[in-house]
Image 1: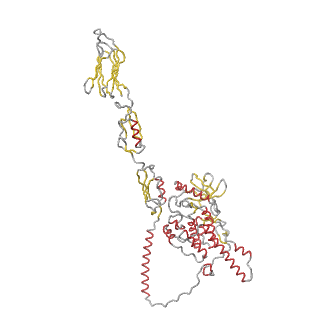
Image 2: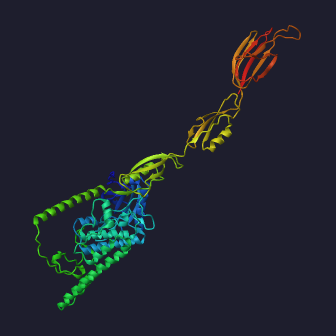
Length: 622
């Protein structure tokens, strides 16, 4: 896991000053701070940057703040503001002057009735959350704060879920702290208010015994202990009523526990009140034996429920009128301790005549066998104690987000691609399926969409442009037409295409089409002369071509009605045949059109017996 930067010394949105780190969890880091606008001390929780990159976790953070704001109770940390600064997402809450229950337990044991008073306040706060259909799901000493005046406050609803909603986390994995997790949480099942009751039972057990009932290092071992094992017995100094409350709160089946925080708070309140009344009754009997009545002031003090008060320091607390604890052997036994009466020991049988050395050898061999068996069992547990996680849902998101979700749970990802209608790069399938249980470091196979399957390009040459466009559209492709000169090809006809017919393209891609433009007359060559023979070769590309000529007659005629002027002859160079032969008549611009088609031609103009001036132009039609 990367390390989040320490933002101490910065000011969020130029309003909230971050002073010092006072706590840190999996999702966020908590700073003590100062609200410049309202001029008060506050606590500021910053979400860690790698969570903010995931929109699901950012939404979860925003929901946590809204949940806290929704619940109003003196025993729940009050939220003031929520926002997003350049440094990241954050919310602002009241700063508790005191310590966490975890820090309190590190300093030494808690007396039984002090533990009961703390648990009662805790249950009253959770009762308000349960009334709002919100389940905390991560009750533990680190999330229980004790203010300097002895009030208990619950914080960090970061993994809370609405009771009517899904109990799955954003990554579809088990949420909570294994040491304080209920059996149904270990199974990944739906959480209820009784889930929080179980966690409170674990916390109360830890305050009474000085340690949690199950304290294994592996999360899997802890889950198995919560599922199947009974907690060890509480110390003998534990009052019987508190022993019963813990036993009911730690029932494996939720229906056998207290229904919610309010029900457990009532049970603790009754135990505290009965304990106070019992002390008052014993005091009255003792005074009556001496011929005196109980003091009204003493009775009033005894009638008050025990409350947490400070003894001068911010971290030391006790219960009013609580006598100092004595070792079990020095205390008189009480009926409310549920101690069993003393029983007579059984009479010992006479010592048998045994072979001591042989017996010792047998015991040594049996012990060695048990040690070997224990070592094998331990090795098997260690080998098989790999932590398990639930596979998150990775379908419908990008590759980077899928990889991030899996890696946060210690899973590897292997990506493959296949055609699909989903956008390219979107995850479309996974194996194992979502919510399947696998070992940490397992590989999840994820399929990415490579887009729709490719389309085969049809043959379009020889078709009219309008028909070619329709055919491409029917297979999901588009046309890009370029008009070119195409001799001998009807206007608007496709002459060539790219890619070639039979190629494959992704849908919506373009096919380039060359289309014949409307034909027109285009000049090829020209000749002019007077009194001499002139010729020229030219290449015709179209199916039609023409000769345009003009001549000015200036000579004399041989006879009255016969003039010998310039003469033109057209030959096909390849075949050697004469295409046409004609005289250039007198007058203005004249045209002679040929349908001889494409080819190489030779035009020769011979002068006549006169000195006429002539000019000839050759034009191609395409």
